[in-house]
Amino acid sequence: MNGDNARSRQDADARSPAADGDELRNRHIRSFVLRAGRLSPGQARAIDELWASYGVDHQPTRLDAAAVFGRNAPLVLEIGFGMGNTTAEIAAARPDLNFLAIDVHPPGVGNLLKLIEAGGLTNLRVMRHDAVEVVRDMLAPDSLQGVHIYFPDPWPKARHHKRRLLQPPFVHLLSSRLAPEGYFHCATDWEHYAAQMLEVLGAEPMLSNTAAGYAERPDWRPPTKFENRGLRLGHGVWDLLFRRRAGTPAADHSESAAPGA
Ligand SMILES: C[S@@+](CC[C@H](N)C(=O)[O-])C[C@H]1O[C@@H](n2cnc3c(N)ncnc32)[C@H](O)[C@@H]1O
Image (cartoon, rainbow, N blue to C red; front, side, top):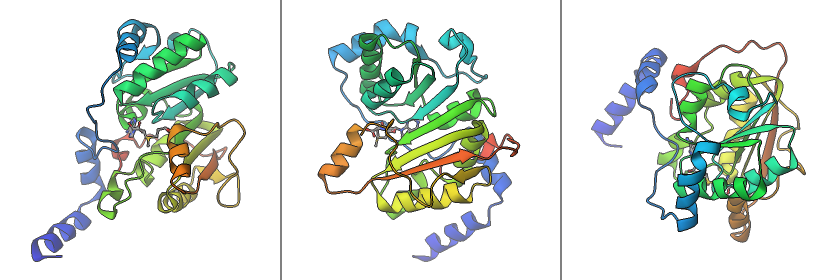
C-alpha cells in the first residue's frame, strides 16, 4: 500500500457511522453492475404489455401490498431473481402467499413477466430497481413473511467484497422488515460468501439460525439457473435458513442499509 492509499484507508476508518449514514442515504455502493443485455422480442413485448398488470414502480412511500395484489396474504420478498424461472415455480407452488420479486436486469424482468402470464400467476409482482432502496423506502417494519436471496452476485475479488449485498447494515434492515417468526433464506455457491453470510446473519440480534450452521436445501427451493451453472463448474452449494426472533422490536435503521456501509 502506498502512502496515499494508507492515508485514505485511515481516513475511511476514522469516519463516524453517522457520516457513513448521511452519505449512504443519497448515494451508496451498488451490489450490481447494469450490463447492456439484449432484450429478446418476447421479453420486450412482455415489458411493454404486462408491466402495467404485474410491474410495481419504485416510489418513496410505503407499499400498499393489499392494493397491489388485490388481496391480503403473507408477503415474501425475493431479491435478485435473475431470469425468474425458480421464482415463478415457487409462486406457482404457493398460491397462498404473495411474492414480490426484485431485480435490475431487463431481460430477466421481461422473462419473468412472460412466465407470470404463461402460468396465470396472480400472486407474483415484479420490481425493476435496486432492492436496497425498495426495502428502505417501501417496505414497512414487520411486513414480510419471508425473504429469498438465492445466489447473489458473489463479487469474488477481495477489493469487490464491499459490493456484496449481504452485509451487516442491509441484513439488519431486512431483518427489521420480517414479521416475528418470518424467515430469511439465502443460498450461495461461493464458499467465502457462504462463510460471510453465516457470520453476518449469525451476528444479527433479530435473527436466530434454524440449523446448526448451514441448512439443508428445503424442498420448496428448486435449483436455480445460477446454481446449476455453479454445479457444472464443480462448486458446492450452501443454504442458510434463519428466523426473526419473536420479541425483538424492529427499529428503522434504513439510512445505513447499503452494501459497504
Ligand atoms: C448471480 S444472479 C442470481 C440470479 C438467480 N437468483 C439465480 O440463482 O439464478 C444475481 C442477481 O441479483 C441481481 N441483483 C444484484 N444486486 C441487486 C440489487 N441491489 N437489487 C436488485 N437486484 C440485484 C442481479 O441483477 C442478478 O440478476
